[in-house]
Each structure stands twice: as structure tokens, then as C-alpha cells.
Length: 166
Image (cartoon, rainbow, N blue to C red):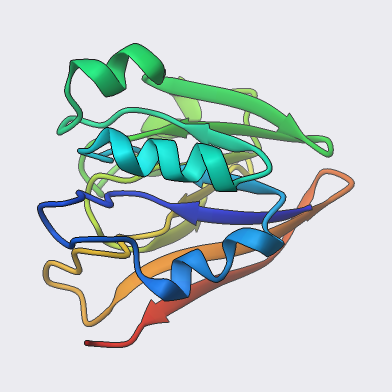
């Protein structure tokens, strides 16, 4: 099962559209995960229309229309992998400890908010991934998103994709 992970698209404020590099990955993704801050409903509609399966949450910049359609926290089981998605996890310091306590029965937590790619594990083995942002790099050198594979409950092949500067 192939995953496409994104967050913090902030359309149309940070970009007019999703980058081609991300859109080109949609046909090969079995599940698209968006960890909030869509900002516009059109992006949700686009991904719902193109993704085989979409798992998304709202973020702090998402208004009432998006909050009516998306949960604050999403959970799913993907080929035996227990997934949770949330937008905010708080400061980097202590993140693993806080997330392990908040999501005790989770193998993979996907989050956003910081626009900073993140890949760590808790002491108990939960993987924490933040795909960064495909539209707003902030202080990062590149705009980013991630792909990964799930097979029999195992997450493998996690890859951070760097989107070239325009």
C-alpha cells in the first residue's frame, strides 16, 4: 500500500495550486494523508476527487466549512498499521513523549503545522512524520511532501520529496 503524505497546503494564500510534483504522485497512491491547514475547500474537493482514499484533518487555519467536513483527529488501520493524523503536536521539545501519551495505540502519527519535515520514533516505537509543506517552505530550504509504503503492518520506504524552486 503506497501512501502520499502532505500538510499545510495553505491554498490559495501560499500558492495558487498544488505543485505538479505532488499531483504527479496521486495516481500511484493508495491513500493520501493530509495533516491540516488546507485553507480552501477546493483543495479538499480536488484530493477527494483524485485520491483512491483520502484521510485528512483540519488545522488551525481552516475555517468552518472545512471543519464541518474534517475531524480534528483521524484514525485508520492500513494493512495492519495503526495510523493517527492530527495537525498540531506542540513544541518540538518533548514531542515524542507527549504524542506517545496522547496516541498510545498508534504505530504512525502524521502531523503538520510547523512546515518542518520531521521523522522520529517514540521510546515505544511509534513513528512520527511531518511531511512539511508543498507550498510554503518558511525557513526550510525546500517545499516538501512524503511518500511511504505499508506492508503487513510495517511502514517502509519513507521518502521526503523536495520540490524544486520555481
